Length: 249
Image 1 (cartoon, helix red, strand yellow):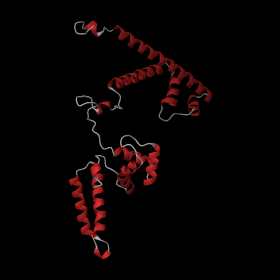
Image 2 (cartoon, helix red, strand yellow):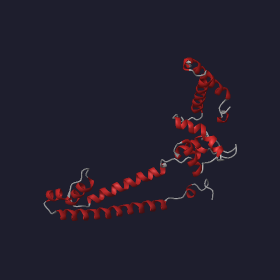
Image 3 (cartoon, helix red, strand yellow):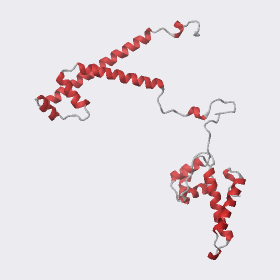
Image 4 (cartoon, one colour):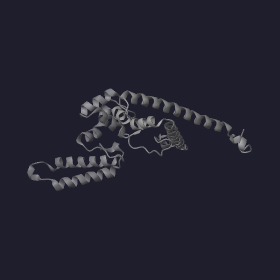
């Protein structure tokens, strides 16, 4: 039987073949001049292949004619070119198979990897007594709580520094900065020049000077905050000093 190597129960494959035979008998039309055995062969083959595609993996397989052909012919072509069962195919092997089956090279690579079957992430790494599982080595893309807390703290410090820096500006400088840099729809230099009764170049100069003052004030504030944080950490007693009888030297 050519479907043994897919790792599915033979009894189930035979049952699917019987269902295909029943469909063939039900749909057979003798007046067309074909033999029942020839007609039934195609129904049996289609029924068994559909069952294998449904049962092979927890991830649904492609059911287009090209994908079906790739699934059932890939092993045969790998044997012909002496390709290793484990690992990825070499580029020249991928190109050969894709040309033979008229599919794209990425489809060949993906199907070759899927033919290895499903793997559980709860399988232990190493011997049977190992406690580490494959899922323990998965990388969590979300930041850890410590990083999140640090980012929130940095954002808060910058917000406070920016607010204090804006308070150091004159009323006209702050109005220009808010209209040019903080508004949802920033105003142009010409619009602000008309509002304040000065030239366009004067607005640009005031904006540039205000930005310099804000940058200097923010940097000074952040540096001062970091210095305080560092001094506070240095002043805190160590765990051993707090609990000498519980911390090993």
